[in-house]
Amino acid sequence: MGPGKAELLTFISELGSISAAAKRMQMSYRRAWELVDVMNSCFDQPLVLSNVGGSHGGGAQLTEFGSQILANYHTILLKSQAASANELAFIAEHLKQSD
Amino acid sequence: MGPGKAELLTFISELGSISAAAKRMQMSYRRAWELVDVMNSCFDQPLVLSNVGGSHGGGAQLTEFGSQILANYHTILLKSQAASANELAFIAEHLKQSD
Figure 1 (tube, rainbow over the protein chains, first blue to last red):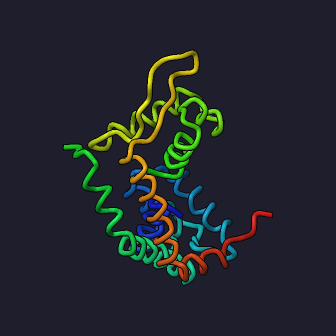
Figure 2 (tube, rainbow over the protein chains, first blue to last red):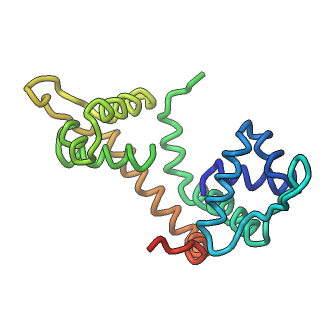
């Protein structure tokens, strides 16, 4: 799991469709499917269920497990940022501004 | 900063040489130099100082600031892992074993 996969799960959850999520992320449908396949095959149960059918596919949704993993991912980011606030601030202070 | 750059800094610090660090990481000398350049130019002061000279270059070492950034990076990882232990355990439980 990383930012790309988490964002894809978020959009699938919001839009109910892998193709719509891919379009929103300016990602090819094929690439989005690959990422979903990787996630579904890395875990012991699927994160995304898709229904075949229709000209734009039959929709997709996160499983309860997929929602748990996505929530977990965001919790890890938040807790990590909170726990490392001083160290992250030190780095940010010393990064050159890009603008 | 990510695992690759952190590892490179660690080996430069231990081996006193960018070329030796690159060799240890099975990375090209050119690539190692690029990563050092990126790090040195992203921050408001250099992380690595190198001395030109000799057939294998004149050695390199971390600045005090470079050591601070590297220590910071490891602290962030440790604190993040500790803060997210429950969430990371949940994910690990549900990842398929690769062996």
